[in-house]
Length: 105
Image 1 (cartoon, rainbow, N blue to C red):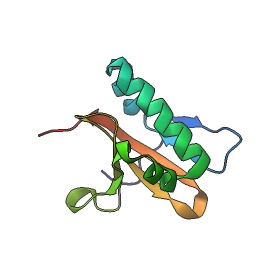
Image 2: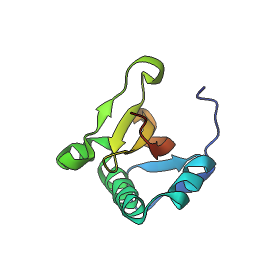
Image 3: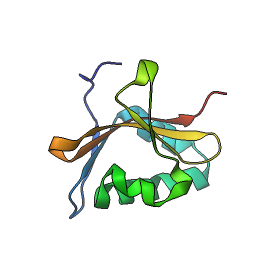
Image 4: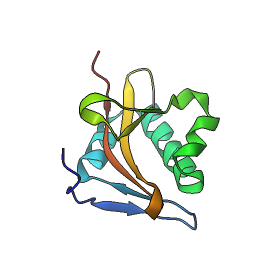
């Protein structure tokens, strides 16, 4: 789980923030239920426009810093079970999405 992983896809609009996704994220999203895909697309638009701070304005995402093995990363809820795990590079105005998956309970 090193940071030397290379993002595959880049999404940039006329915004301040760029989002980089690993190839496995696209694969997971393509298999996710439709409502999760819609929420993930909304999540990306918010991050592109306002960075991860914009997620705080929408309580349904329950955005939070992670601990333990994932210390330094953040997580947002896309549904009851689904999460997006990402890393913020504030100085570069970039967000790296590492996983979109159903949370293990």
